[in-house]
Amino acid sequence: QVQLVESGGGSVQAGGSLRLSCAASRSTSSNGCMAWFRQAPGKEREGVAGIGSDGRTDYAASVKGRFTISKDNAKNTLYLQMNSLKPEDTAVYYCAASRWYNCDSRWARSGNYNYWGQGTQVTVSS
Image (cartoon, rainbow, N blue to C red; front, side, top):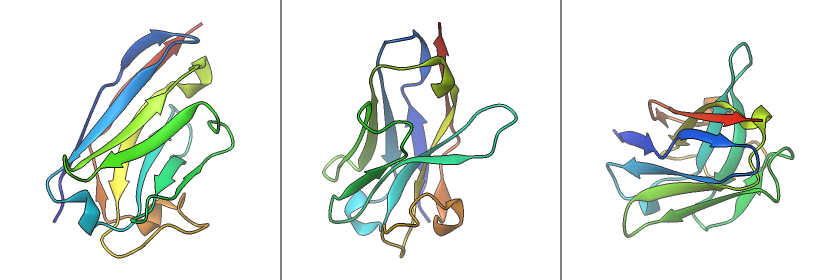
C-alpha cells in the first residue's frame, strides 16, 4: 500500500505559477508510472502529466510547455511545476501512482493507477 499526500495548491492570478508536491509513503523509485490528474467541476478527471520509472515524461496538449513533472526519489516526492497558469487550469489536482504499470501512450487513463492522493485545489483567477 502506498499513501500519497498532495500539497502546494492555492489561489493565483492568471500568468502566475504554483508548484504542487506529492509525498509518497514508499520510495518513488519502486513505483511504475506516476502522474498528475485534475478534475474541474462538472468535468471528468483528466491526465495532466506522467513520468515513468526511467524518468521519461509526457503531457496533455493543454499544458505542454507550461507544466513540468518531476520526481525526487531521495525524497519520495513527485512534483508538478505549473507556470503561465490560466483560469481553465482551475481544478482539484490529484497525484497517482501505479505499482506495476509503467508509462506508455495510455498514461492518462486513470484505471492504470492503484494509488491516489486526496487532491489539492488550484484556483486561477483572471
